[in-house]
Length: 95
Image 1 (cartoon, helix red, strand yellow):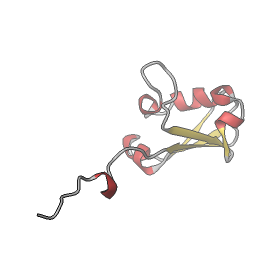
Image 2 (image 1 turned 30 degrees about the vertical axis):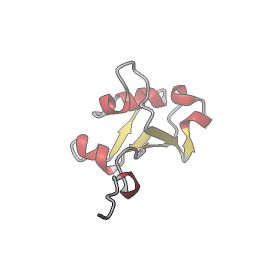
Image 3 (image 1 turned 120 degrees about the horizontal axis):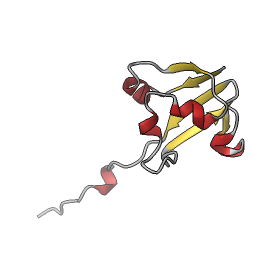
Image 4 (image 1 turned 180 degrees about the vertical axis):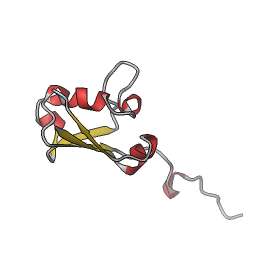
């Protein structure tokens, strides 16, 4: 039994649940059982580039990828990207 933990933004999309206990042979199989699987995987079935997955505190890429067994805890972390900061705003010149 693996515990899957979602960040608050994904938990809101999963009906307010941030913790799921699932039986699955692989990390990918566990993630695909989640109600937010469509947000984790793209239209080609690949994990979206801004989604990071950690198994027992180790990046899944360092544990054999999504085919790896889920371990005790799988934590999904959605990276933050995009937006504009103060540096991106056009500056006005004094008259």
